[in-house]
Image 1: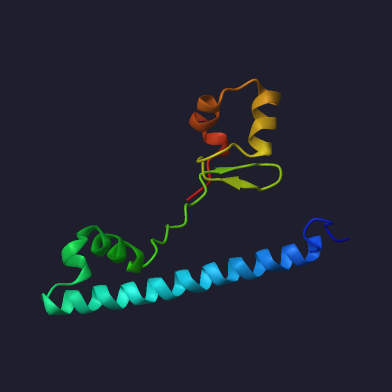
Image 2: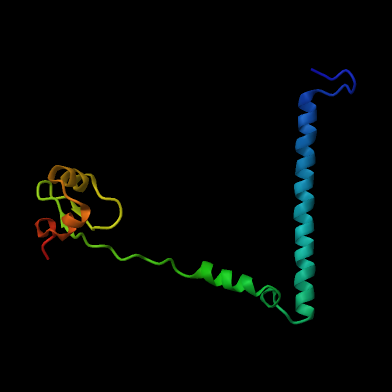
Length: 121
């Protein structure tokens, strides 16, 4: 379907928009590359680095390059006497603990204090 005023279809208009967006992105990339080259050249002329101008970049760069911290495995402290399921005592209480607390009318503090559910060393 073409517009009676312009004689251009909607599909053709969409294609023109797509081409214009590609042209904009190309020009941005070209401008970015040219600007980077100019900045690098100017920094060499005055014997500075980008980190001399923006020291916060060096800090962030160092943080990105550090090895990820590996968490130590947490040993279980509590054991379900019926199923053998275990829990470290951290985080959300597993279903077996919640069910046991409800069945025995205990609080989590009473559960943790009771030696009946501790894992033997």
